[in-house]
Length: 495
Image: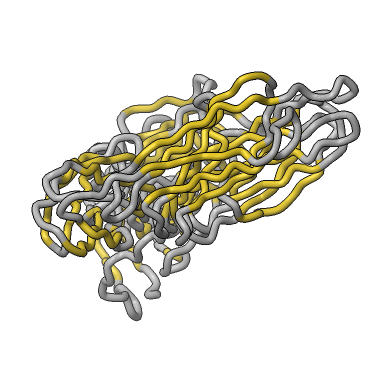
């Protein structure tokens, strides 16, 4: 069964007469609903048994985990069950430790029980004889290509060592490709003949996937995805407005996706820039101070990142007057160096400026605090992120305000354990600087922390390629078995 094909295996009494009726059900469209196939077998053996085989999701996405359940139930007389075995296709990866089963009226048994064994893609149960029924199930990770996938089948033994059933019983599921997305970071200040790094962050793209970069529709190279990142060095050969995109091609298991267009202006030669930075007033531990950077030549575009002794305070966009400002809450007194790093913009090169400042100690009656914002994982648009900050004062009181750049996301009260949490649902993709600002409370002073976050475009699992729908009855097959004089009838219902 390792190649994913199914086969019928009846050991021992090939002269068995059997009657099998097959019923297939479940949602035809993409669905988390289960889908089942059933068959009843009778004939030369004294008893008839019904096999019900269910997959927990009728239309899983590549990488989803599903449960395959096989239930064998006696429908006449009193034969016992001595074995049940279930096959799945080779693209089903068994989740270790998830096999379990139970005989009618018996105790639940788990995978560690010696009655379970595994061989290739087959899960086996064998016992001393139980009745009137036994069920077993195992969890699998679906690693199949998109389209219709038969899920194998099951057999049972009502006489020790003699199996009947069908390893092609099914049901058949429809596997969907996993959705992907590509976020292309905005290239800054490209210049003719100077190397620029094109950088993407992906979602759903496996390691080894290829990202293709185009400039004005022309392929300029590709890069291999590793840990959801890929970069490509690009050297512009001509000046002017350019449109840059990144894309991932569709495969048998993953959907394709294309980034948004990034508009850039390639300059013949970038103009040098300078940055000056000032701190308003007299900075003091626990109190807010406004930092303002001025970029020359003035003009809107790019951003300034502010740093306190190398630790990022935050970032702010550069306005038309060439300035960018942010509030800073010093957490330590003494001599500090504030750096302001300008990213550059079209036609203007990046630059850096710095200023030494003296931060006054907090008043003796006040207590300095430290606020720590939890790291933020790369997340897709539309998925909720729980922002969490911890204030080392470790006491309730005050609030934490969470900012996306200079835009307030919301506020949350500080709990008795010193933490404050706020759900955030980003609506647009991009590279973000998230800031958590503790307001201070009583003798406890204000403090803040920042984290970088990347929000990638929303992924949508692509629909399976259209296939001809089944209509009406799929017919029946009638055949005599050698020596048994019995009849096998297979029938299935149209959808």
